[in-house]
Amino acid sequence: MTPPGFGQVGSSVIPALHHGRMKSPWHPIFLTDEPTPGVWTMKAAHEVGPFGRIELRRVSGVVRYKITMGGDIIGWSNTLQHACEGLYAARLKRDDEIRTGPPNGRG
Image (cartoon, rainbow, N blue to C red; front, side):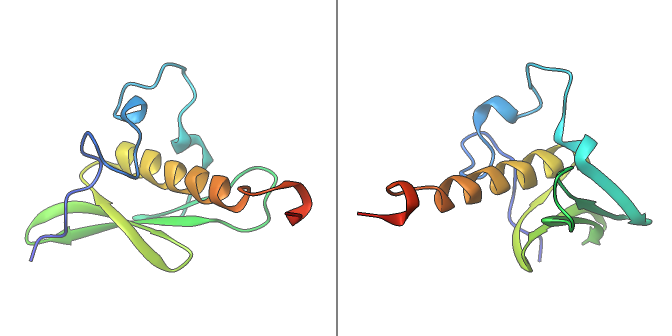
């Protein structure tokens, strides 16, 4: 069974801006570290531990990148570039959801 597609235009995880057409020379791949071959972890400079992980997998003879955040699989990608963009976009979305509501949690 082939994993579902990931990183396609209109994906809820990757905004259209990120589909390989980022406007600045910075890219989320710069936040990654490869502690073991085929496994990348993503960590912000101000954080102690990684917030996500990308693993190189062969699925039905095709190379795919499995993207996880907090132990949950958030998607699959065909390229490391799109996998990094997807993981970073998911983190931004998660952080935005945490910050919703009134200041200091007061209603």
